[in-house]
Length: 187
Image 1: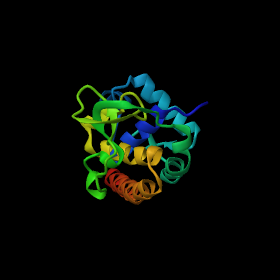
Image 2: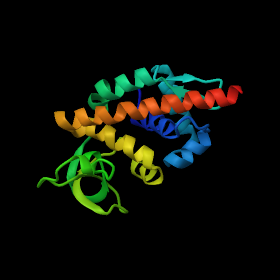
Image 3: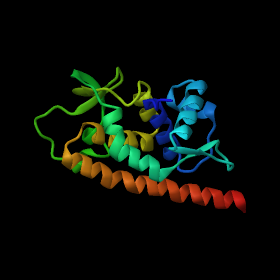
Image 4: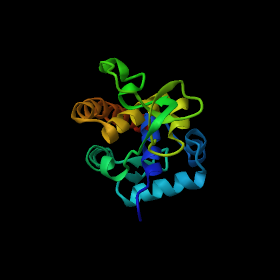
Protein backbone atom coordinates (compact mmCIF):
# COMPACT_ATOMS: atom_id res chain seq x y z
CA UNK A 1 0.00 0.00 0.00
CA UNK A 2 1.35 3.38 -1.02
CA UNK A 3 -0.26 6.61 0.14
CA UNK A 4 -1.10 8.89 -2.79
CA UNK A 5 -1.47 12.69 -2.95
CA UNK A 6 -5.20 12.42 -3.67
CA UNK A 7 -5.59 10.66 -0.30
CA UNK A 8 -4.37 13.79 1.45
CA UNK A 9 -6.67 15.91 -0.74
CA UNK A 10 -9.64 13.78 0.36
CA UNK A 11 -8.70 14.13 4.04
CA UNK A 12 -8.25 17.89 3.69
CA UNK A 13 -11.70 18.12 2.09
CA UNK A 14 -13.21 16.22 5.02
CA UNK A 15 -11.53 18.70 7.37
CA UNK A 16 -12.82 21.61 5.28
CA UNK A 17 -16.34 20.23 5.77
CA UNK A 18 -15.90 21.00 9.49
CA UNK A 19 -17.59 17.88 10.84
CA UNK A 20 -20.53 17.92 8.41
CA UNK A 21 -21.58 14.49 7.12
CA UNK A 22 -20.23 13.45 3.73
CA UNK A 23 -20.56 10.65 1.22
CA UNK A 24 -18.13 9.15 -1.26
CA UNK A 25 -20.23 10.43 -4.17
CA UNK A 26 -20.52 13.91 -2.66
CA UNK A 27 -16.78 14.18 -2.08
CA UNK A 28 -16.11 12.87 -5.58
CA UNK A 29 -18.21 15.63 -7.15
CA UNK A 30 -16.69 18.33 -4.95
CA UNK A 31 -13.13 17.17 -5.61
CA UNK A 32 -13.45 16.44 -9.33
CA UNK A 33 -12.58 12.78 -8.73
CA UNK A 34 -14.43 9.52 -9.23
CA UNK A 35 -16.21 7.88 -6.28
CA UNK A 36 -13.84 4.93 -6.69
CA UNK A 37 -10.82 7.25 -6.30
CA UNK A 38 -12.31 8.75 -3.14
CA UNK A 39 -13.14 5.31 -1.72
CA UNK A 40 -9.66 3.99 -2.49
CA UNK A 41 -8.14 7.12 -0.95
CA UNK A 42 -10.07 6.62 2.27
CA UNK A 43 -9.03 2.96 2.39
CA UNK A 44 -5.36 3.90 1.97
CA UNK A 45 -5.69 6.64 4.62
CA UNK A 46 -7.19 4.12 7.03
CA UNK A 47 -4.38 1.64 6.33
CA UNK A 48 -1.83 4.43 6.88
CA UNK A 49 -3.59 5.28 10.18
CA UNK A 50 -4.36 8.81 9.00
CA UNK A 51 -8.09 8.05 9.23
CA UNK A 52 -10.38 5.73 11.16
CA UNK A 53 -13.62 4.06 10.20
CA UNK A 54 -16.47 5.89 11.86
CA UNK A 55 -19.82 4.71 13.09
CA UNK A 56 -21.18 8.26 13.25
CA UNK A 57 -22.50 10.02 10.16
CA UNK A 58 -19.51 9.81 7.84
CA UNK A 59 -17.77 6.60 6.72
CA UNK A 60 -14.38 7.70 8.10
CA UNK A 61 -12.68 10.46 10.06
CA UNK A 62 -9.18 11.89 9.93
CA UNK A 63 -6.91 11.03 12.86
CA UNK A 64 -5.84 14.60 13.48
CA UNK A 65 -2.65 13.99 15.46
CA UNK A 66 -1.32 11.53 12.88
CA UNK A 67 -2.45 13.69 9.97
CA UNK A 68 -0.87 16.81 11.49
CA UNK A 69 2.39 14.96 12.05
CA UNK A 70 2.37 13.65 8.49
CA UNK A 71 1.54 17.04 6.95
CA UNK A 72 4.17 18.89 8.98
CA UNK A 73 6.99 16.38 8.89
CA UNK A 74 6.46 13.87 6.08
CA UNK A 75 4.31 15.31 3.34
CA UNK A 76 6.87 17.88 2.05
CA UNK A 77 9.31 15.01 1.41
CA UNK A 78 6.77 12.57 -0.03
CA UNK A 79 4.55 14.81 -2.17
CA UNK A 80 7.20 17.08 -3.65
CA UNK A 81 6.05 20.17 -5.52
CA UNK A 82 7.49 20.41 -9.01
CA UNK A 83 8.47 23.93 -10.06
CA UNK A 84 7.33 24.83 -13.56
CA UNK A 85 7.89 27.87 -15.76
CA UNK A 86 5.98 31.13 -15.76
CA UNK A 87 2.29 30.57 -16.34
CA UNK A 88 -1.17 31.88 -15.64
CA UNK A 89 -2.93 30.14 -12.79
CA UNK A 90 -4.42 30.22 -9.32
CA UNK A 91 -2.29 31.79 -6.59
CA UNK A 92 -1.15 29.38 -3.91
CA UNK A 93 1.04 29.25 -0.81
CA UNK A 94 1.89 32.76 0.44
CA UNK A 95 0.37 34.33 -2.69
CA UNK A 96 -3.10 32.88 -2.03
CA UNK A 97 -5.63 35.60 -1.12
CA UNK A 98 -5.99 34.44 2.49
CA UNK A 99 -2.21 34.54 3.04
CA UNK A 100 -1.04 37.42 0.85
CA UNK A 101 -1.50 40.06 3.57
CA UNK A 102 1.03 38.15 5.73
CA UNK A 103 3.91 38.79 3.32
CA UNK A 104 5.59 41.75 1.72
CA UNK A 105 5.47 41.27 -2.02
CA UNK A 106 8.97 41.03 -3.41
CA UNK A 107 10.24 40.90 -6.94
CA UNK A 108 9.83 37.13 -7.26
CA UNK A 109 6.78 35.96 -9.18
CA UNK A 110 4.04 34.47 -7.00
CA UNK A 111 3.56 30.69 -6.92
CA UNK A 112 0.53 29.53 -8.91
CA UNK A 113 -1.16 26.27 -9.85
CA UNK A 114 -1.31 26.31 -13.65
CA UNK A 115 -4.98 26.59 -14.58
CA UNK A 116 -6.82 28.07 -17.59
CA UNK A 117 -9.22 30.00 -15.33
CA UNK A 118 -6.44 31.46 -13.20
CA UNK A 119 -6.07 35.22 -13.04
CA UNK A 120 -2.52 35.41 -11.64
CA UNK A 121 0.68 35.18 -13.64
CA UNK A 122 3.48 33.55 -11.73
CA UNK A 123 5.83 30.65 -11.14
CA UNK A 124 4.02 27.38 -11.86
CA UNK A 125 3.89 24.87 -9.01
CA UNK A 126 2.41 21.43 -9.40
CA UNK A 127 -0.70 21.10 -7.22
CA UNK A 128 -0.93 18.36 -4.60
CA UNK A 129 -3.25 16.52 -7.01
CA UNK A 130 -4.43 17.39 -10.50
CA UNK A 131 -7.99 18.27 -9.40
CA UNK A 132 -6.89 20.38 -6.40
CA UNK A 133 -7.25 23.73 -8.24
CA UNK A 134 -10.81 22.82 -9.32
CA UNK A 135 -11.72 21.74 -5.79
CA UNK A 136 -10.12 24.85 -4.27
CA UNK A 137 -12.18 27.13 -6.52
CA UNK A 138 -15.34 25.49 -5.11
CA UNK A 139 -14.40 25.66 -1.40
CA UNK A 140 -12.59 28.56 0.29
CA UNK A 141 -11.68 26.53 3.38
CA UNK A 142 -10.14 23.76 1.25
CA UNK A 143 -8.28 26.41 -0.76
CA UNK A 144 -6.81 27.78 2.45
CA UNK A 145 -5.74 24.32 3.62
CA UNK A 146 -4.14 23.55 0.25
CA UNK A 147 -2.32 26.90 0.24
CA UNK A 148 -0.94 26.13 3.71
CA UNK A 149 0.14 22.68 2.55
CA UNK A 150 1.90 24.30 -0.41
CA UNK A 151 3.70 26.67 1.96
CA UNK A 152 5.11 23.55 3.63
CA UNK A 153 5.92 21.97 0.26
CA UNK A 154 7.72 24.95 -1.32
CA UNK A 155 8.36 27.51 1.40
CA UNK A 156 11.47 28.52 3.23
CA UNK A 157 11.71 28.46 7.03
CA UNK A 158 9.62 31.62 7.54
CA UNK A 159 6.80 30.45 5.26
CA UNK A 160 6.80 27.00 6.84
CA UNK A 161 6.64 28.49 10.32
CA UNK A 162 3.66 30.64 9.32
CA UNK A 163 1.96 27.65 7.68
CA UNK A 164 2.24 25.67 10.93
CA UNK A 165 0.89 28.64 12.89
CA UNK A 166 -2.20 28.80 10.65
CA UNK A 167 -2.72 25.07 10.05
CA UNK A 168 -2.91 23.92 13.67
CA UNK A 169 -5.93 26.11 14.58
CA UNK A 170 -7.79 24.89 11.46
CA UNK A 171 -7.28 21.28 12.54
CA UNK A 172 -8.42 22.14 16.06
CA UNK A 173 -11.49 23.89 14.65
CA UNK A 174 -12.36 20.70 12.76
CA UNK A 175 -11.92 18.65 15.94
CA UNK A 176 -14.30 20.93 17.86
CA UNK A 177 -16.91 20.98 15.10
CA UNK A 178 -16.75 17.21 14.62
CA UNK A 179 -17.17 16.67 18.38
CA UNK A 180 -20.13 19.08 18.45
CA UNK A 181 -21.69 17.20 15.51
CA UNK A 182 -21.27 13.94 17.44
CA UNK A 183 -22.99 15.43 20.47
CA UNK A 184 -25.91 16.61 18.30
CA UNK A 185 -26.18 13.13 16.79
CA UNK A 186 -26.18 11.56 20.26
CA UNK A 187 -28.96 13.85 21.52
